[in-house]
Image (cartoon, rainbow, N blue to C red; front, side, top):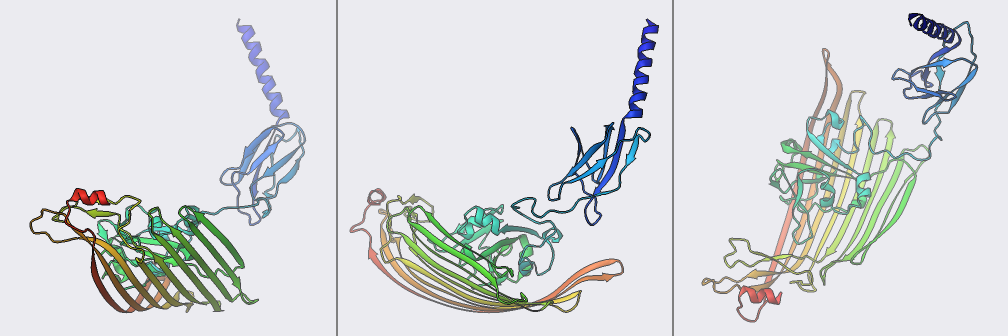
Amino acid sequence: MDKHLLALASTFLIGSAVYGQTSGIVKGKVVDANNNPLSSVTVSIGDKTVRTDHKGHFRLQGINQNAIIRFTYLGYQATSVDYVFSSTSREVVMKPVVLVGNEQAIDEVEVFGERNKKPKGLEMITRMPLKPSDQIQSISVISNKVIQDQGILTLTDAVRNIPGVTLFGSYGGVKESLSTRGFRGVPVLKNGVRMDSQFQTASGVVDMQGVESIQMIKGSAAVTQGVITDLGNAGGVINVVTKTPNFTNSGEVGVRVGSWGQFRPTFDFQTVLDKKETVAFRMDGAYERNDSFRKGLSANRVYLNPSLAWKPTERTTITLEGDYFNDNRTPVNSAVNLNPSQSINALYVIPNNKFLGMNSDNVNTEMKSFMGQINHELSDRWSIRASIATSSYQVDNLTTSATLIEDKEEKFNTFSRKMSKSLRDDKNKTFQFDLIGKDLYTGKVKHLVQAGVDYRIADATTTSFGTKLSLLDSKVPCQSLIRQL
């Protein structure tokens, strides 16, 4: 028995030795044109395949004949190297294999984000040229890619991508006042500037066709943005960054058709105006009209956003931008409080086929703004940023609402229809200046410093008119009112 085992072991050892003498090992390294190692490159000989490690190294074994070694990697040209087998040299170390990039290797690439890159316009609310990963504040960014993919048309729909942000009130569907962290009236800025003086910031109305991204600083860090007159500034601040030229030649036209008669054509084109690529122009625009699931409601809107960018020197960029927004829509309330004392909510949701207003009800919102901004690098470490903005926010509001008639005996729940008209003329001017220093050292400690000043003038005038029309011919109980509704 022992003799048979000894013979079997001897045969195995002899076979292994013969295989080791006739089977080769190939080692090597794969790099790019800049001599940087490439990981996960596919290296193959026949049916044998391995991948390079994080240092670009590979190892193939069991090669006992002449062969062709193939190297393939996404985004690079496939490369082949001839391998000559030698029975006298069991291990062969190849020279580094260089792969050449191939930009035509794939037809299309979708980029959803770039690591270590600062979103466009972020410094307008942080006031510091830092990437989100370097910020001490909690910052959320909704990119134009998300806005397009989700078909977002309102600011409320956009901020649903930010946890904890909700719509506090729409004021009859004509404005958007947002809430977060228990605070209502979150300030809404456009390119870092307030467009109105309303402390609830309910006039944060914008057309998404002209939006590059939406950014939000959460928490009390928003106080540093100089909007401490708002109710919700301690909860955060929202910044709407508009589209400006990217010094490319491109354009697109789109049409959106939806339920309830929605029709929305849009356009966006930009072009470089000179051969040196120092001046560029961009124009965005949209028109929209639609009805509603409620009978008698309609809306229409016109939006234009022209902008011009100029680079007089390599260190200087000047951007001029205009913005025009005109919106007409029927305001509507969806519920009535049927509690006689009105101290406790007894909300009755008005049926979809009912509307308590009149055909003349309409809210016209017109917003016009102009902004000029200059960014100039004084040196490699110091730069300045200055901007001036003027805006006009005008509202013509003609609405009808149902209000409770005072009844001391509280025997009846009687409502009257009230027609009111209000006008608002809100003008704002803002000047901002920032001095920024980067890569400044105190010993081995590197600093980034910023010093700035904001100056703002707000001038708002409101005018109100009112009258009452009878809603019911006689006093009727709540149930009768419900039946009539």
